[in-house]
Length: 118
Image (tube, rainbow, N blue to C red; front, side, top):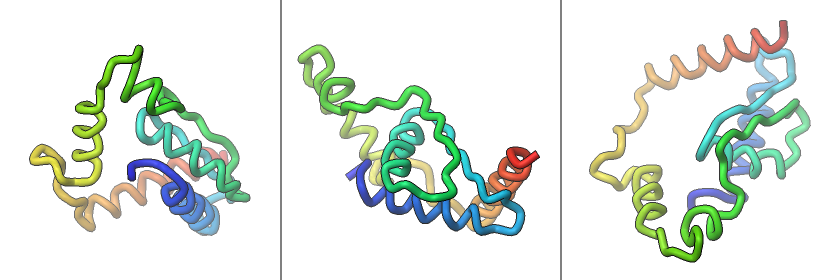
């Protein structure tokens, strides 16, 4: 499954763990488009206490009407391609993130959180 309760629960934990970091003001904001926009709706539904705001851009809210069957035309091939890429089963999917990539992402998140507190 691409989106849903589990993603929201994981996001809740991420928000709370981020808020607890010494470099964070305790207020966490989320922003993103596409999948990152959709995930924000599920995260916000879990009501993380330290989530200050969300900014979902270009994220669909009804998969059937806005993607799979837009205008009554079957488009399930596109959804399968996206699912394959996100789940790492596509021959075109990126390799798993390395420890260095993850550390770089953490540093970037830390800077953004510090900037938001100023």
